[in-house]
Structure formats: C-alpha cells, structure tokens
Length: 104
Picture 1 (tube, rainbow, N blue to C red):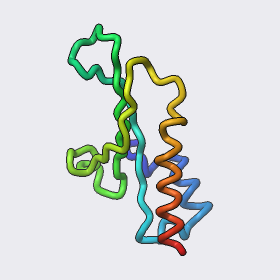
Picture 2: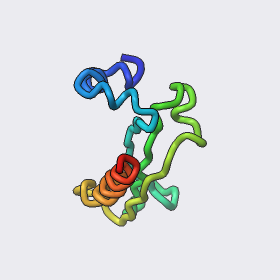
Picture 3: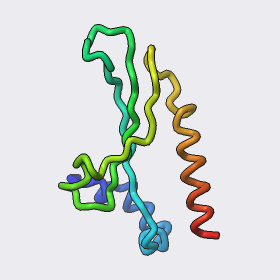
Picture 4: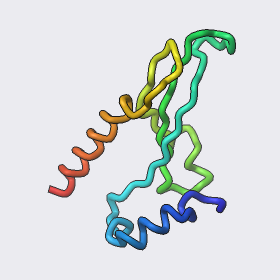
C-alpha cells in the first residue's frame, strides 16, 4: 500500500457508504500527533503535543506540504499525554456539528 486511499479501511468505507464518496463536501483527513520539546532540549521534562490533520483530498505530493496541513490543536505539557481522547473530543464534537449544519 503506497497511499492511504488504497487501504482496506478506506475501501470498506467506500463500499459500505458509496454516497459518502460522491458528496463533494466529503473530506478525508489523517490525524497525527507526537511529542515536541518546546525548548529544543531533548532532556527537557516538558513536552507539547501538536495534533495535525493531513488532507487526503489533495494529491499525495501536496498532502504533507505546509499549506495543506492543519494544526488542529496543541496539547500542553508538562508530561506525556495519557488519554488523547479527552483532548480530541471537542474537535470531534465541532466537526459533527459542522456536518450537521451542512446537511440540515
């Protein structure tokens, strides 16, 4: 598999809900997060977790370019995130609300 759109999960979604793919408002995002030391010191006890959304609706060579990445949220330190779901919940709720308004 070279592209995310070739994955079995994406194929399953497209076969189960074909109308989802046909809708021009349909957006595919990948979510990524990793710890970053905000002070540039690897031994720092403080870490920050940026959460980035990658737009998979653009060609693969553009998906990871600066203008196509979306910084969705920043999870502040000082320690490692134990449960990222707590931080992602507002993002999911906001996205669902936006979709509900579009489809209303």
